[in-house]
Image 1 (cartoon, helix red, strand yellow):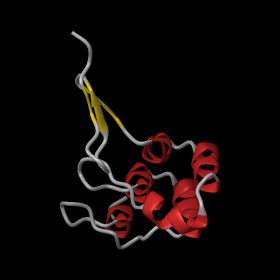
Image 2: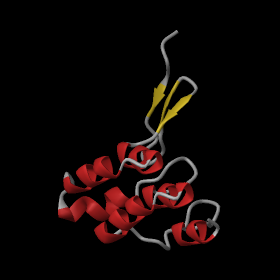
Image 3: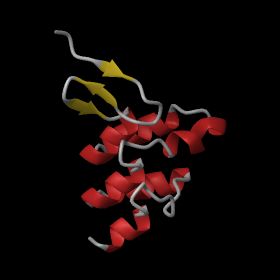
Length: 102
């Protein structure tokens, strides 16, 4: 049986039992600062805010993931690009709150 692929808008894609994050979220989670910069630079200015606000299935943004993993360089790149440190996930946690727990 082939893996099932479901596109739920801002939610990650499901392939079988593996969750595949959107590229910006994956790069932020992995600590790949060069890839994060590349993805941001590839966005049109008028769509950058929406791009930075893409979320995983828990409502976490790239900034949330980078904050949780302690990827300081990526946090700075995302903030400079305009990511919102007060954007709450579905559980109410913001990237700022997540960073303060580290």
